[in-house]
Image 1 (cartoon, rainbow over the protein chains, first blue to last red):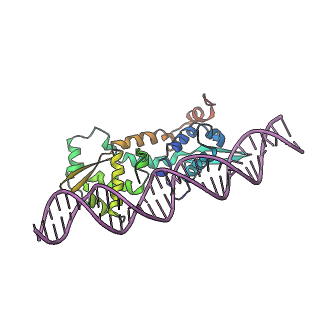
Image 2 (spheres, each protein chain N blue to C red; image 1 turned 180 degrees about the horizontal axis):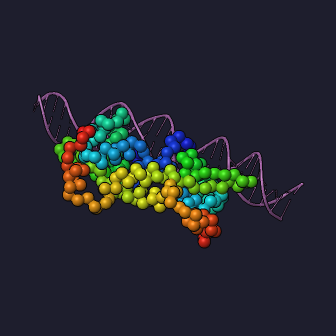
Length: 110
Length: 110
DNA sequence: TTTTTTGGAAACCGTTTGGTTTCATTTATA
DNA sequence: TATAAATGAAACCAAACGGTTTCCAAAAAA
């Protein structure tokens, strides 16, 4: 969990972090509020949140003794865009011509 | 790299694996052909490909002494769908009412 | 002013990750 | 048939990951 690689793809690879994203997408919560949703310890949640902040998916704002965590999920566009590059693999709208053009012709930079 | 967690999100968290996906999305290649695109060793590439097969993003077919690797990226729909859940975070089409409803009203399960 | 709440930070731990080298096996080819 | 090509498999490794417990500091509440 110690920070070295910090990109969005790696940040969302952990299911707990995706849950945290889901929580914070609905409302801002302080750290303990987030931790209350999980069985893992509060420091573990804090580390997940740090990872999310390091790739910009969460911003943190301290007020008094509380640390409010807010989702800022613009960075997920990169993920969406990347996955959508391969949309044809799960879309059935390909007709014979498209298949021919996409797969049967030799690639121009092959 | 030893296989335990096998979900698509974790499979695509590694940049090398995303590159392999890109390669195989354009044409089927045998293992050495894939490995030629990288500086890491052939066994390392083989392990990446195994991970991709274990979550169904790549299928493998042996013919003679060669192992042909083919992309089957339907599984990326899960990633696309998940990311698109948060599309409003990078889409500017929210008007004042939407912002009000989404953020300013107290959450019903708060 | 004690006491609680909130959370940062450090030290530690076992497992997973991403990589290597080496060796064996199978299939083609000279 | 001897050799080369393609790959699998095993053993190993350092670093990162995901988690813990413990302790400390600051802010709020009794």
